[in-house]
Length: 292
Image (tube, rainbow, N blue to C red; front, side, top):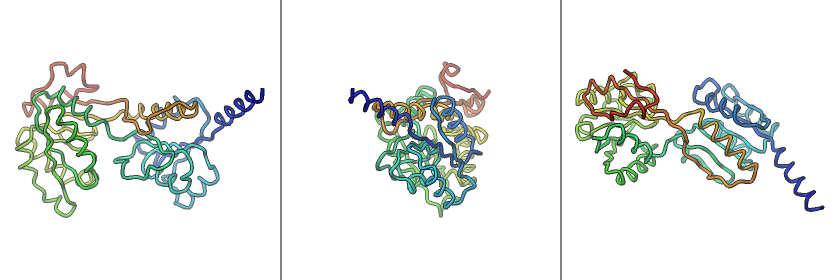
């Protein structure tokens, strides 16, 4: 009887864990999509906190006042504050670019912002079967992403041509040599590159000049002329986090860091025709959206 009592009490304690969803900025679409999906798929009570307009002292006080058992941190800002002020708690995260640069000691779990490199390369080969060399622009901030691509590319018969950029010389950077050597160019979420509009325009100008497709990670690059966009599905990420927390509460084993389970594939058929790139005849069944 005593054993049953203690087991019941332990179960109640687990069910009573307090949960806080901490949003870096609820005005950011990808954050909101993840939180909305989490809310619809998590069947336990939780509180929410948008820290976008809060000072560090206000965030600290809020975390101390709430002192949740579990935090779902959406975005880098939320994760950093939760990790700093309540490091002893369980913290789940999503929507963080290059999450590996953050401290992940202790009870840290999450969904990567980057899709599995091997899966992306497989999709690229499926859509653009003639692609054998891919130029990837990166800086020191995304070296680990390029290393993953290089490792997985070998197994698929693809060669990665890394183009390392520096902030000082980026505006005057010429991509001609690499674009000429590559069958396609890839844009990854590198902070130096994506925050430099001139460099982005230069890459697309040179790629169009040599009729090479550009593969990107966000739909915004379609307006520049990207041929293929492979991105994670934000609502799926929210659902994944909900499932991860639920599994943990139920004492089930989970993988600490998971890749996004859902993808969005946008194929710019108009751009592909313009540059004359060959693509899969089954594109309509592969892509989630086709730009005609």
